[in-house]
Length: 344
Image (cartoon, rainbow, N blue to C red; front, side, top):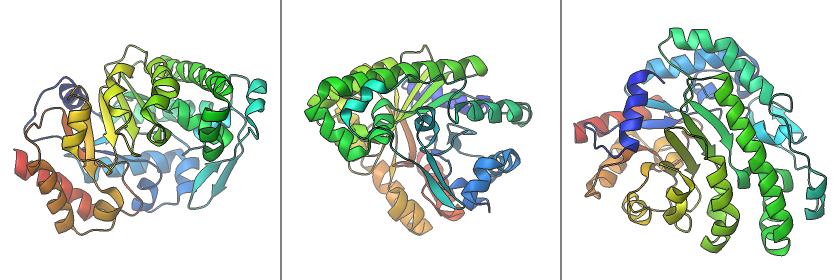
């Protein structure tokens, strides 16, 4: 992300209404490598392919912002690997992290990982350190510390059904698990900020937040997200493309000031539920419209969303989640150009 794009992002978070409205997309392994002509495994294992694919996307769509920008990740395996999870890889498949806890009682044997030494985390840092000179030569900086959120990591360590059930049957042990995971996240975010002083944002992804009630979010989500977002940075960006109605009114209390949400709710509803305290990024349907629709479908969806809004402050137009696999160039361009035409 270059300086102008970062300043645009900060302006939206601070409540300014920009003309034209900005667009942005979360891009990572489900879309970027195949779009650029590479396999997912090549993207993860070859630094040059990783850099070239990101630069290719930036060059193809210079009018938009890609978030978090040069995302050094290993899919859902990144943080679970530090806890000893086995990472399962395919040549062109999304990697998967096997669970490490087979009953709630096993939480007591879990130890907090060291992000400097454990799992794939040192590889995340080294990749960016190796490429940082070329990233900066291209006019960009590393702006975000990135991680999965506390409930997301816990669900990979236990399995999602098992974790959600244990919130009800073993709440004390689940608080212990979430406390340990959050302590680790605070360390992991701090290490990223130490390695890259240009970081002034945190990006956390946690869809499991969307699977719990408001009461359970207040108990098992809010306090841990607040701690994970506690660092003194300007942009605190949260992704949850599962249902958000239960958690939305409380997200600002966690320190979150930018939210990418899914397609279950309208932009107008989210503005109401968040009391317009959070900048919203969304929410064109990623699969059915951006991925599988035509450019005309994309333009129609963007137009309908914008026409339904009386207040366009704190708004970034995007899809309701990350860019989906196989989303075509012309559909992404249609979203960007439609927004520019309607809001300039």
